[in-house]
Structure formats: structure tokens, C-alpha cells
Figure (cartoon, rainbow, N blue to C red):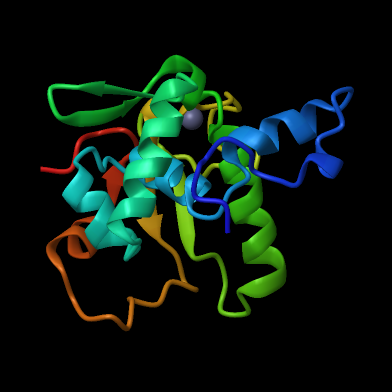
Length: 173
Ligand SMILES: [Zn+2]
């Protein structure tokens, strides 16, 4: 594994005429999209990322530094916050979650997404079943779905908070 965080993939994959390859250089490394996901779930502190992900701290340090360098996260007063550029990754994460639910979660969706304003269920494109709007993450409530299984690593405060319904991007308190 490349711990430098500079290149996500062997250079043979990095076709300069393909923006997917370019994007994967930023978010394609192991752990990176999970860190971004947890930032949407309201995790902001280094220790909470480490607890939630079970990621080696040196790797986490490296990934966070790279995401700040690429303006996906900003580091403010000891907290890591998604930038507007980072928030733009939400449709990517949402689509991958939906794909995983459809093909690898026989018990049903792991998590469900709802429009905070009117309680409408959101589809994989974040389209509200009630009002028809495409709902941004800041107006999205997330809840454990029928396929959700609590982690086997034992309860911890971060997981307990994440397993309760909550609005995306609201800081974990
Ligand atoms: Zn709605």
C-alpha cells in the first residue's frame, strides 16, 4: 500500500484524459471515502475518526493531511470539516451506498435517507418522494435501515451516536 497519499493508483491507470482516473487519485485510496463518509455523518475530530474507522493512526494522519491539501476537508480549530468541494462528493457516496445495498445487503438497505423538511424518503439520487426536490446533504436525515447490523467490535460512543437518526453534516456532540 502506498502511504504517501500522493498517488492513489499505479500511474498506468492514471489516464490524463479521464477525469475518473484523476478523481480516483484523490479519493480512490483505501479509507479515503470512508473518512469522507464519516465527515458527512458529523465526525470532525481525529480521535473520533480513529475510533469509528479502526484505522491505523499514521494512515489516518496521512489521509487527512492529503484531503486538506486537496481542499476536500479544511482543518479549523482542531476539527476537520468538509469544504464545498468535499460536499460535492455526496452523490458519489450515496450512489455507491445504494449500489452496495442492492447487491450486497440481502437484509435490505443499511441506511435510509429522508428529507428533513417534509419526512419524504429519498431515493438513490437524493430525490424526495414527497416534494420531488433533489435534497442536499444538509437537509438530509439518515436512519439505520432494515439491513443495518450493529458493529461486532463492541459498543463505543461514536458508533452509538451514528446508529441513531441524525442529520448529515451536523457535528457529533
Ligand atoms: Zn421533500
